Structures are given as C-alpha cells and as structure tokens.
Length: 413
Image 1 (tube, rainbow, N blue to C red):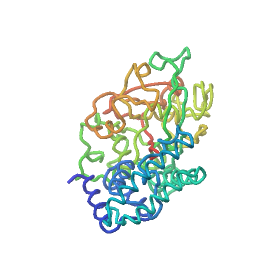
Image 2: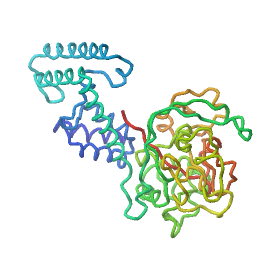
Image 3: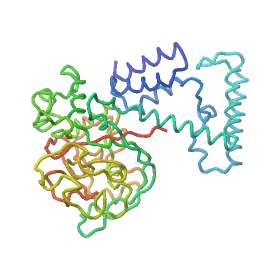
Image 4: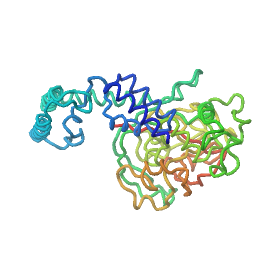
C-alpha cells in the first residue's frame, strides 16, 4: 500500500465515524499528511474534499451550489443572482426527487435543502456574499500558515516563518547592457499568490529532515546512505556523519543536490519555487532594479565576492521589501524549473514553469535528468551574479558549497 493510500484509509475510517471535524483536527490531518505520508498540502486537502470531510458547520456555500468564487468574478450582480437561482433550483429539485434517503454526508435530504436555502440567500445578497468570501479566504490562509514546520526549540524559530507574496504581475528579466541573451527581454508575468520562506533552509532544519528519513526508508537522505542517483559524491560533504558542523545551526545548508532539496520540500509540505516566483520574490516589489534593494551593491548588502570567504548565518544582511533575507548572496538557490535557454521566448505569461507542470515535476522528480535553474549568486561569486534577473543552471546531481535552497507553499483556493 502506498503512503497516499495509507492516508486515504485513515480519512475513510474517520469519515465513517463522522462527516465533520473541527478546524484543529483538519490542520492536524494536513500536517500529518505532509510529515508522515509525504503528501503536499494541496493533495491532502483534495483527499479531505473527495471524502466530503468538512469542518463543523463552516460550509462553503459555493461548493453547496456547485460553482466557485472564480466563476462569479467577471459577472455583474444580476448575472450572479441568476447563476445562484439556477444552481439552487437544480439541486433543490434533485433533493426533492431523492425522497427520504440519508445522504453520503450523513444529512437527511430535508437538512440538505435547508443548507441549499442558506446558500442561495447568502450568495444572492451582495454584502452577505462578500462576508462569506472573506471568511473562506481567511480560513484558507490560516490553514496554509499552520502547515509550515513547527518552530525549533532554539532562537532559530523565526527561520520557519514564511512571507505571503500577493497575486499579480511583475516585470521579469532585464534589458541592461550587462544582461545575457537568455535573460531578455523584459516581459510581464502574472503569478498566483504564494508563501515563501523568509530565510534559506538551515543546517538545523535540514537535519530534522535527515533524521526523519532513516536508513531503512526508500529513498532516504543520510549522508552515507543516499543513492548515487541523487548526488555527485559530495553530498553534505561538510557534515560529520549525519550532523552539521558545530556552531553552524543557523547557517544555510549547502552541498545538497536538487534531488535532496526537492525531497526536503516535499517532506515539509512545501515545494521549490519556480524561477518566476523566485524572481518576483527577490525583487521585493521593485521594478527595473538590478538588486533586491536598488541599483547599487556593496559588502553591507550581501555576502558575495569572497568578501568573507564562506557562508554566514542567515538573516545577517538587510531584508528586501517583502521581508525576505539572503535572496541574493550567501548561496545560490535551486528552483523547480528545468533549464531552458530560450524559455522567455516561449513561456506562458501566467505562472510560467519550464519542464512540464509543477505537479508533474514534483511527482517525477527522482527520475528527472535535465539541468535545473539556480538563482541568486553566492558568497563566492561576483556582484554580477547577484542581479535578480541573472539566470544560471546546474545538473540536478550537483552538490557544491555555493548552492542551497528555500521553499514555497501554494495558497490553496
């Protein structure tokens, strides 16, 4: 039985006992799905939805009537009312025809018709509908925030926090004279809202992942047990056995391959950022600027150019406009995308990703062979590599002292 099937069995058993759960139970189930069964937050939420396991009486009236918030975004008030009335009429008639049966959700048809009427009355009324949508969105954001790893029992707990990057357009790429051909032209890209780690993943955080995947698990990520399919021979080279160097808990983990970064992200209930997400986050809300803070750079802004000669603890340098640290310098960061030299010429303007879909890349990452995108420059590289538009690539097996990573999480709608 697969890990996913094991989780489905738990949900099926829980659903047989009760059709409703508390909000706390839902959060716990989503955390369990990511930490114990390797599922993404989105996959786990879909399983709960498939089994119609709902939180108490906090009902999504859009689901009740069979359409989504997105379906009404371009409609005027009259059209929304007509849609609501038609959906209500269709489902109410079906409920009447069903007679006195007990529904799969445990409710009687009479109880269901009461909910249908509540949904109709709420969604037809402009103010009530807006209030309902706000409640749903608040619940979704709260759930997503709760899925970040539990804070560590040290002063590095802030490293587990994530920043919300709002949905919207930004200008990707650069037309500067020092820009390479594959970084041109500047083009408008729309990105859905997402959460991103405020800091790169640290040694202490990565050790939790290593410890959670013991030698008998497959695949597993101990230093001396990892398959050579997933690294080039130097995986966690600076660690002794399966522990990071003394005094380096707050330093960003390096000597990790793309495969290892992907595995960590999946274990944490997150994923690696697409390079478009990475660039939008790195820009910090600025437009037509070389760096996250503007057009100039010096040793007070970031760790680069062998100024220090090694990595520094995360968060030592100023954050950008989104409250993100070390987006450039310290370490390059792995991205989700397959490297494509001509990507800008063919990429979608909406949520672009190279190398199939996000879901497909995640589901098949252990079989990927193509080079992956890395971004941000490092402690070792010159200022040129710290430009937010700078694109680089490396083989997914590469382990090096100049590449680390951070994670993102989708805002589930």
